[in-house]
Length: 192
Image (cartoon, rainbow, N blue to C red; front, side, top):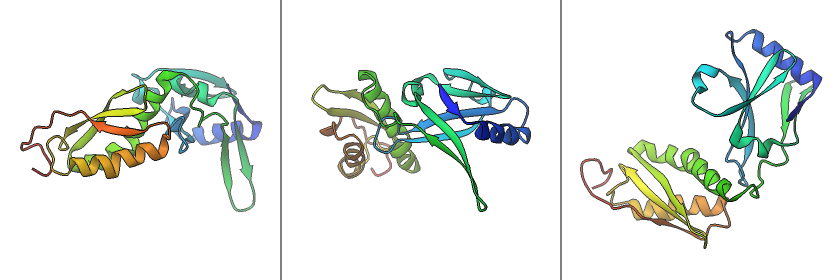
């Protein structure tokens, strides 16, 4: 699946020696299938990730865990080790991580992940959250505001200046974002 150079494999084995028993490697993608996609390599502990669906790849002295949802995006990927006198760096070359042509469900998955990592992280400071409801065939994303965002007097500004701008910038095929929340003001709302 992923070609790992001999030098990079040796480097992984050395790194794993100082980690707790059972620690392995994982390769994953932030913002999969978007212009902002970024491949990453990290340590992996099966106990912490037991309810996820992973495929395991065996290398000389270690294993690499990859979520099945990322497999098609990591096809033809390579990991190499670059060393010079000043630094040692792992390089992940993944030519397919920005690919949007892996089926209709992949756009939904990409937008859900984008919302979770780029939008909800900001809204959590207000006790709020956004959930993807649907993507229409004409490029309209329908979302629901939850928590402190439900009933908040600033929700239309958050929708237009925050959520919609970010989604359209990262997903040019999306034309607009609509709020389908049944807003109810109350103690849960950030601004009543």
